[in-house]
Structures are given as structure tokens and as C-alpha cells.
Length: 272
Image (cartoon, rainbow, N blue to C red; front, top):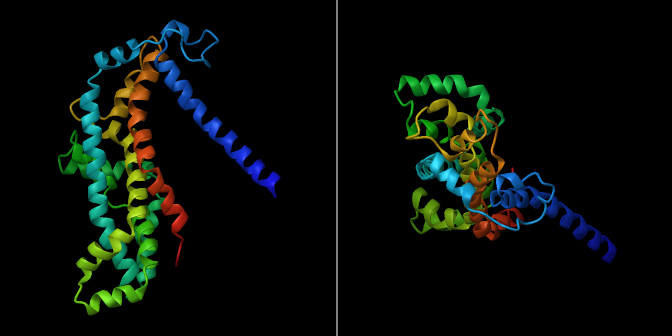
């Protein structure tokens, strides 16, 4: 039994090391002089670390403007998603009506639709409303999250019906029950969905690239692409510095919220 446990931990340790290698290489290359990147000793920390790559990044593009745009877009999407998925999840989980199962499946079917399949109709709608080159244009296609609704619905269904009955007897309406009972009990799920949503849209590249063509509203990932498409080829030190700058906030966010994030997977189950 002990050997099996040790073997599992050994496998997990190997998986962690493999996962961390790209992050380690990114960090070391970001602080390495360009001429030293492919000298053969890139697996070791640089002997003479430099911040020159970061200086080039911030001088070559308005990265703080991109950062502000990214934060506004990501938090805007998350706020609108929460406003929509919370009542939708409550509706499908706690209110019984005819054909609720069919309607729910139609609602969450968007999970199976890739963004690429909806780019043309989404672009036409955004253009018709005159929202090209706006932050709102980057938010609108993502505000109704089928995945978030599904995740939160499953959590709401686990709340005992007796708790809701007691709240109703005490004069608690639907909105008060959601706000004072369901949401506090669903905090791990809300944090998990928020983290997934933020990470997904923080790293989104295709839609912002299509819907914007001005630096005023572009996001970090578009700025990162500038260092790949240079005529002389990519400057890997500068590229890794830009990638490090973009990746660090998400890593820090996960480290801060990891306990709540993991708790949602350990304490929640899927209930039909």
C-alpha cells in the first residue's frame, strides 16, 4: 500500500516538473541577453540577468494601455456573465416547469459550438450596431455562458429543498434566497468559474484581433503578436519578456485563489 502511494506521488511530482518546465524556460529567457539564449546553457539561470528585454517591450508598444484594455474587457465579461448565469442557473435548478430539461439542453448547447463557427455572424452583428473598435465589441459574444450556467445549476441543485422551504416560510423571496442563501453556499463554484472565465478571456487572441485594428482598444495578446511578426524574425528574449508580463497576473491570481478553486472540485458533485 505504501509503495502504491509513493508511486502516485512520484508520478504527480514528474507531472508537476514537466508542467513547470515551460514556465521556467520562459522566466529564464526573459532575463537573458538575446545572444545568450541559444548558447546551450539556457536550462540554467542567467549569470548576468538583464531587464533590457522588458525595457524593449514597454518602449515598442503601449503595453500599459493594452493591460488596461484587457482588465476592462475581462472584468466586464465576467460581471455580465455573473448577472446572467446566476438567475438562469436558479431558474433551471429550482423552478419546475414543462420541458425544462429540453430548454436547458438548448441553452447550454453553445458549449459545443467553437468560437470559430460564430465569428462571421458575430462580426456582422457587431458591425451593424457600429461597435467595431470598441471594448464592448470584445465582450458581447461571451456574456451568456452556457458552461457557467451548467456549473452553477449543478451547485444550486445540491442545496436541500428543505432550506428553501424554510426560507419561504420566513418570508424570503426568490432574490433574497439567491443573495443570502444560494450565493454564499456556492462561493467555491463562483470563484472557480470566475477564474476560468478570466483566464480564458485574458488569453483570447482571435476575436480581439478580428474586431479591432487600433491600439487604443487592443489587448495584451495582440501586443504580444507584434513581437512574433517582425520581418527580421522573433527576438526570443523580448518575446519571452512580453509573455512573462502577460502570464504573471494569471499565475498570481490562481495562487491567491487556489484553495477555493480546488475546494469546488473536492466538495461539489454532478447531480442530475
